[in-house]
Length: 122
Image 1 (cartoon, rainbow, N blue to C red):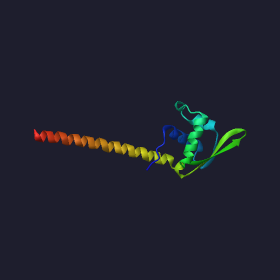
Image 2: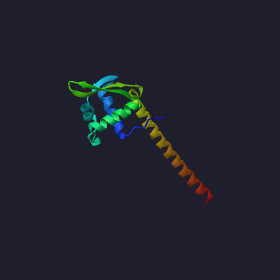
Image 3: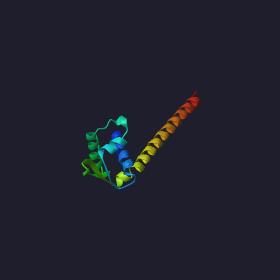
Image 4: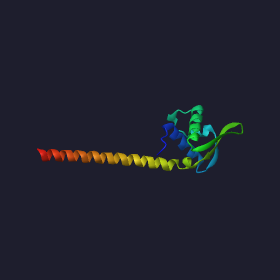
C-alpha cells in the first residue's frame, strides 16, 4: 500500500523537496542537500549518494551526475511518486493515528463490557 522509507530516506526526500522549491527538474550539489539535512543524521556524501540511488530505484526521481563549474552536481527530475511524497506521507500518518484511535476505543469498549459483565454476574 505505502512505501515505507527509513528515517534517513525520509529526511533525504524532505531535503530534495525543499531544495526543489516545487520544480520538477533542478540542479543541486551534494553540499546543498547535506546543508538542509538535520545535523543529527550525521550524513556524509557517500551515504547520501547511496540513499539517492535507492530513492531513484524506488521511482521517486531520476538522478544524473553533472559537473557545474568543477563542482559535482545532481540533475534531478522528479517523478509522480516524488511529487506526491508529502501528500502520501501525511496520508500514511493520518492512517496510523486513526488506527491507534480505533485500537484505543476498542480497548476501552472491551474493558467497559468486562466491567459490566462482572457487575451483572456478581
